[in-house]
Length: 283
Length: 254
Image (cartoon, rainbow over all chains, first blue to last red; front, side, top):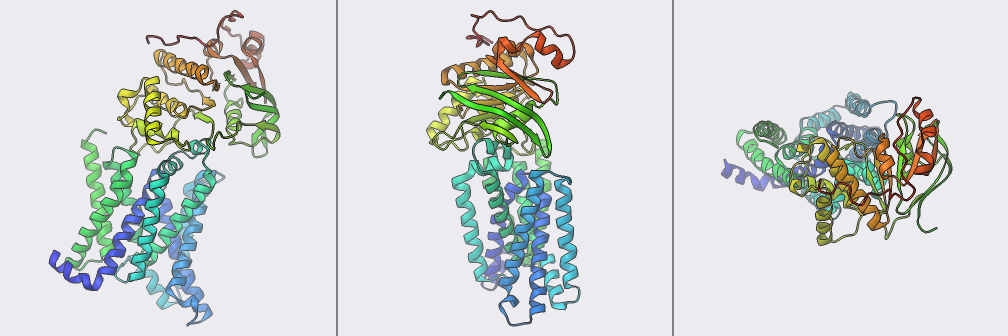
């Protein structure tokens, strides 16, 4: 099994590396999402990114082929922009309160993104194929530049956490306390929402919705059940994501499964194991 | 007037278009222990949010203490902890969050943490999950998180809720010691008249959209309290003028 995986390395190493880096990066960001108990925001931001990609494809088809708007980079940037916008809207709803609950706003973002992306592509066969490809998640098409991009994004995330770990944790856990401690909570929330949107937006363009959303929330949820300290989550979640990614890609290669779904299924199974472990282990 | 920490002049506070408090004027100085009393919904928490800078004054001016070397000089104890209860966090991690924004090195952080845990009788629980602690232990952890900053002013919203008599005594001893040693001020919302009578140097009665504020002996009287709560009250015995309001040995041996 491992030999067959190693044989496939020459052909798919960019896809594997990009997939693992996406897993590590999203699992780190996911600790923040899970700590705030905003898992559904992750789903809404993922769908909003898909909507952005659909808008990019639709714009390209309206403006005609051959221009800069008819490129994968433009689609990825549009996906990122919509994801950032969705992250802002949902985060603002979560912290400001208002007439609607945060869940209602998040649900609205999720549904408008899902239905909007399908409606925009309903008369565009190639566009619909791309949306379906992203919905079903495949990392096989990842390029060398994707590997470098996610390496840089991961390094920046690790750097931020290394220097501002306590601030990030306090803002994630108790924004009111963070404000009293002198942190500029509005600015921090804005930056963290933007980061969430950028990371998810680009990840979805490369790996699709299922793998990106699974990598965002499942490793952090597993780590939350296994870890005893908040600090340990930032170590456990990426380790779980990476280890599961390696095993899942080997299995996917052996049994000819789509790697994104295989990784998501493995993470779901691990989460059940973590729940069972927690049920028998005193906290 | 360097020892003035907060100065409110004819301040109005509220939410949206609705003013909760109007005409609030008071000065809070170093070393003072302020108790804010009043019925539920009278605006005590709104007043604290004003002091914390979460609410802007809609009228008047509210001068707050400036940062000291870039560090916010306020410690805050909320009514309850808003942390996601499914998140693993140990007591020492939780208390250590109080040091966010301070510029201490690792050794100084450890020293601060050890001091505050010792002060609030928590060192044996340091590595325990915050969520396995009792209500009273969690409340002490909240107070420890505020105190670990060694702030110039402590803002506390019903901090002795959930505490038994011994724990309350330990907490108030720690607080009063801290105020004396560091010439800090304390803003303490409570429903406990006896506690205010025993520890406060100053009292603010919050009711009917305003705050009656002043020295404890002048404000904490039956004539002021009975209209506030709308019923006859047994007001704690007035302290003698020369009686110290900060007990030197509260909680000793507890």
